[in-house]
Amino acid sequence: MILPISLVLLSGFFHALWNVCTKKSLHKESFLFAVQVLSFLAFFPIFFHNFLQINFTPTACVLFLFSMLTHGFYFVILARLYTIGDLSQTYPIIRGSSLLIVPLFGVMILHEHLSMIGWIGVAMIIGGIFTISEIKLSLLNRKIFSLSLLAGTSISTYVG
Image 1 (spheres, one colour):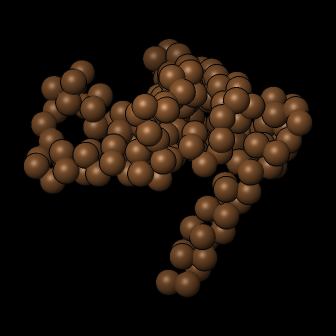
Image 2 (cartoon, rainbow, N blue to C red):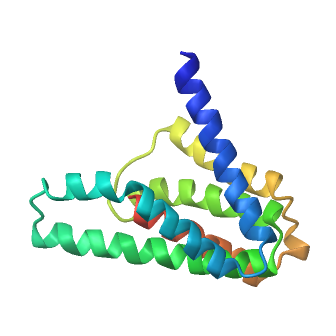
């Protein structure tokens, strides 16, 4: 039980670390590109081994490419956001909105139904976003908020 918890905590630590490093870097796009290249090189052997065993359909190829493009788009938006906005405000909006988009997409587009507990969860996500990021509607920077929502949307797109 200690190993899984340690891995989750370590993963969270490194995720927070690269976000702080991105925010503090002078050339955010270059830093994010370098991180992605290093990640690609580290995991390429595993990817290549597994990739050869997959029989992609044309639809899967399109979805695979779309996921790659939206992931790249996310990093472009993230670099811009960390240039103009505070990490403490943008990050909760980005991560919270990505969690919010999936159930809302399911209800609005796929005509799925959320239970009362599901809607309470959605309300808690919205409340959490506003609480953690200390958003004050009267002082809300619409550009930062919009870009943060766009980044959250791209996360929910490339993950989904």
